[in-house]
Image (cartoon, rainbow, N blue to C red; front, side, top):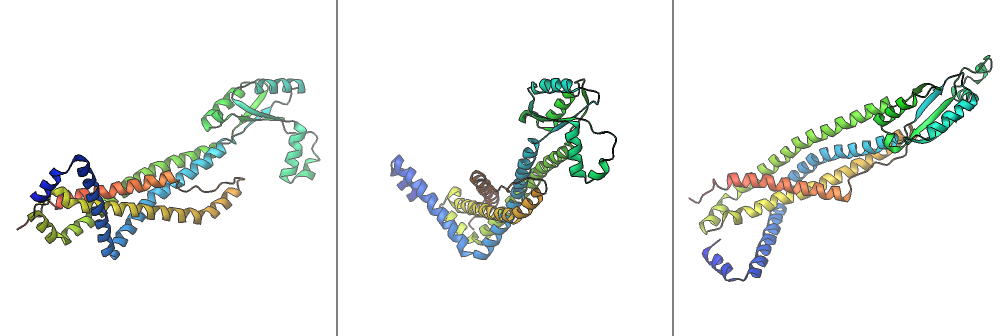
Length: 321
């Protein structure tokens, strides 16, 4: 900035200096956008690279979020089967049902006597005629227990199963949720994978923007030398490049959001068909508006950071000859 400009600014009141500060920033932000439009091919290619790079970890995050939604819905459907010893009378079983219903960990209790169990097995197994020749019913009476939401997790359900198996009328219990524990382990692995890939791609975004800004600085070397000759400050010279990096980040973040929405739309029907086989009806969730703002904010910060590092390194090496 020249001495006359500095003198003019010093004569302005505080409110005027604040207004001029914002006006200069808006002017330079718009000028940096104009530079992008003057180089459409390189700008679009850079934004596309940023959009794809940011969409990969964001898509994995969407996958993890949907997996957590699915597992939480299956957690709430956890069910314990208790098999009653054969020599127990109906009165003893009813007394057991009353005790189980008093458990604070239990939400619902259903009793299936031996005859009901055999009828259900005949209906589902397809061996109805063969089972009619049995001398006696080999199936035990069963009590199905649905835990409360707090005890619907694998750990909580196992604790409840251990407690229920202490009842003297219970022969043994069954909790078939090992598959759910495996699924939760896969979800945890995906979360760590998302963090690792996100860190690598964040570094890639910073490097891509930094290299793009470096090329822009080299192309405007003569202009920068002239600006330094007339007394422009470092902040005044570097500000347009910082705004260029921010624009790259903002538009790259929006492109990443569009890519993710297209992926969700493409995969939603396939996921619905898969979940239908397991009796679930869930729709894939995309990024919320808050997550979109977070993505664009992160992308703009990365754009600013890559520009700042490149500008600080290369502007100092340019001096008017």
